[in-house]
Length: 514
Image (cartoon, helix red, strand yellow):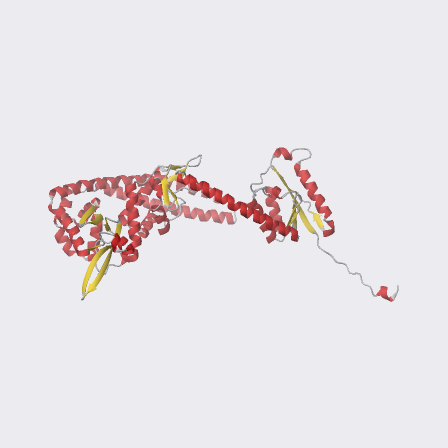
C-alpha cells in the first residue's frame, strides 16, 4: 500500500431512518370485509411508494393504522386517534396515505391535522395527488390547498349566513342554544314554550319593573337560587341580554330589525315595553341614581309623552338661586326644536303628584278604586309566589337527581376525572342548598300573604294622614315613597298622566300602621 493510500480515511455518514406510518380508511364495513379489500389496496400502494424512497432512508412502520367502516367527515376514528397519539410520542416521522381524503373529507379537519403534523415536524404524503409536505413542491401544493379551502369556507359561510337571514325574516328559529323559557322542538327548527321556565321569565321581568336596577335584580335572582338556561349565576350583562331579547314577545331578531316569529310569546308586550323604557332611562341617567344632591323626587318616573323618552333632572343657578327642572332626553340630544315638551319645572310637577296623592286620601270614591285595584294586585302576587314554589319543587327534584348521579360517578373513576366530578358535585350541592333556602323563604312569604289582607280602612287612614306623613319624611324617604306609589308619569302639552303602582298603597298602609 503506497503512502497516498495509507493517508486515506474512510468516512461513514449515518442518517436516521424516516419512520413512515401508513394510514388507510374505507367508509363501510362491506368494503373492508372483502377478501382483497380497499384497505389492502391502499396499503400496498403506500408500501410500494415507501420502498421507492428507500434511498432516502424511508422505512414502513409495522403497526397498522386501518379504520374500516368509518366516515371521513369526523376525526373520531380509533386508528387515526392512535396514530396521532404515536406522533405525539415521537414514534412517527411521516404519514403516508393513498389520497388525502382517506385522512379526512373535511377540509377544515384536514388543515387542522396538517397543522398538528407540522407542529411535531412530521411530513405527510398523498400518493395519488403527489402531495409531500417534506419537499418545497409539497409546501407549494399545501399553500394552494389552503387558498382553495379558505375560499370554500368563505363561500360556505356566506351561503349559511344568507340562509339564516332568510329564515329569520320568515320568523324561523335558526338553531343554537334556546333561551330561558324555551326548548327546541324534538325535530328541530322551532321553539316550544317551557311553561315552568316561562313563569320564571315573567317573574324576572316583573321584578325588574319593581326594582328598576340590573345589579340588585341579578343579586336577588342569585339569592333565590335562580339560574340562567345554562345553569350559570345571573350577572348584570346576562340579565340585560335577557330583558332586551325580542324572542320573549314572539319576534325574531336580525341585526337591528325584528320580525314576527313562529314561536309563542311568553311575556306580555306591555310588560316588555315597560322594561325597555326603564332600561333606556337607566342608560340615560347613568350613575345618577346614587346621587341626588338637589332633591329630585321623580327621577326615573317622569317621561316626555310627545317623544316617549325619559326626562332627566337638570338644574341651573342665577344670582345664587337654584332652578330645577326635568328635561327631555330626546330634546337634549337632538335640539329643542324636535320636542314640543322640552322641559318642565321640577317643583311644579312634584307638587302636582303629591297633591294627587292627597286628593285620593280626601275622596272616598278614589280610595275605593285604589283599594279594589290594590287587592287585585296582591292576589296576582299570591299566584306568582305559588307558581314559584311549584317551580322550585321541580328544580329541587332535578338537582337532587343530579347530585345522586354525580355521587355514583365519582365513586367509579379516579385521578383528574374524579377531581373534576367532585368539583361539579360540590357546585351542585351548593345549588341544592340555595334552592332549599329560597324554598323556605317562599313558604314563609306564602304564609305571610295568606294572612295578609289589604285593609281598606288602613289604606284610607294612611292616605288621610298623608300631610302629616309627608311633612316628617326626608328627601330620600320621600323619593322612596313616591316610587312605591307611582309606576310612571307622562308629561306633555301641559298635562300630566300618572300610572299608579296600586299594590304600593297597601304596602304603604302596612308600613305606617301602628
